[in-house]
Image 1 (cartoon, rainbow, N blue to C red):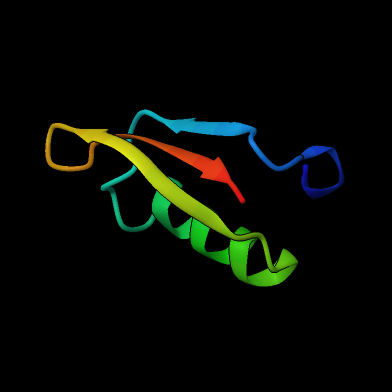
Image 2: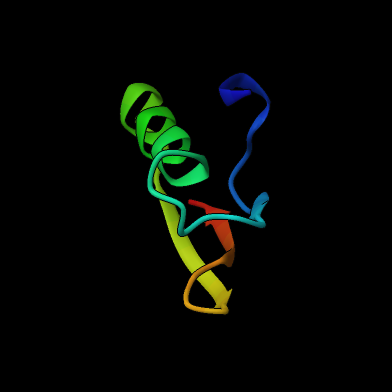
Length: 54
């Protein structure tokens, strides 16, 4: 997915606060490909989140 992401793209997650699921995948992905993101929204104790690619 990394080659297809551009600055300003938004990533949405619907189960982000589950440590061994989407959060872990996001952590591994951003560290492996040096993708910088910024949190732009979260609800339900970070269960659903949105990040913008910087």
